[in-house]
Image (cartoon, rainbow, N blue to C red):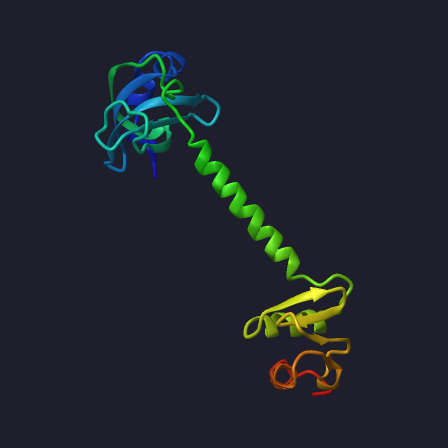
Length: 191
């Protein structure tokens, strides 16, 4: 876009004064967009103004959504000064729900711990692939380099059907059958 016809921004006082933090403006840019906003920052080198406004175009209220805009001041065609606010960022009214943040943190930690438990330590990529595939159909967990299935059947390296031990005969046979299907699906040698 050619900002040639957008000379209004350069005609209204000094840039630093005009775009002082807290000034409230009604703005029209060369694209035809119109909005109201409060100046949050101004950078004279690239000539950018950063500001925000609420849905109604008035001073945003705490707890309500705000739209942040970054505008090249050279592209402003109309600029109407509407006033000044002392606290453009509403820092006194900003609030962070600490309980919600703590809950999100706890959930993220639990998820990271669960993800870490699914990774075998000192096992081959093939062993991890078998574990991941088994975990989709059966409850599994790592116990050193062995895969413990249904908390009773153990699959030892090299993770073949004849490396399945423990548990009831029914559980043992089920794990062997699923292991064979997994190895076939993963196209692993020694199925």
